[in-house]
Amino acid sequence: MTVVGTDGLARPAWASVDPLLMDYYDTEWGMPIRDERGLYERICLEGFQAGLSWATILRKRPNFRAAFAGFDPDVVATFTDDDVERLLGDAGIIRHRGKIQATITNARATIALREDGGLVDLVWSFQPADTPRPHDHSQVPTVSDESKALSKALRKKGFAFVGPTTMYALMEAVGIVDTHLLASHRRGSSGVWPA
Picture (cartoon, rainbow, N blue to C red):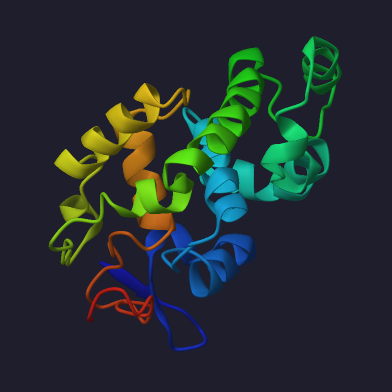
């Protein structure tokens, strides 16, 4: 079910009240990300989000970008144990050792993938033949065969915090699948899938 806002636009309940989430939903969520840095950032932020709300991550995103050099994999890949300790003291981000270390690990894996087609080609190769067409949130999957396969492929390439549910959230966020509700004003807006 969608909620029609005072602007007359229909959004899912999660994006219908908080102005930050509304803006994210209206301008970013589900739009194609086809550049290495953008995908690397989203993979890392989805990993940080595990067990937390996306609103928490979104509010801290500027701090994450500052802490992780704008998610430039070439810079983050050079981070040392001293950087991990520094980041564990940064109240502006989620201070979780495993997730911080995964961000560094994933930067190194992203660089290594350049010799084998690159992160963008790998992630987008898991685009399914079809996309869900949900009428309400209960019809939106949290995992798919493709997200399981993507998770497995990324783990094989050395990535961390890339479980199947996290990878499905990534696929939604970057337009690989379109799980906008059918009544939403954003349905089909990515250009990847028809409304």
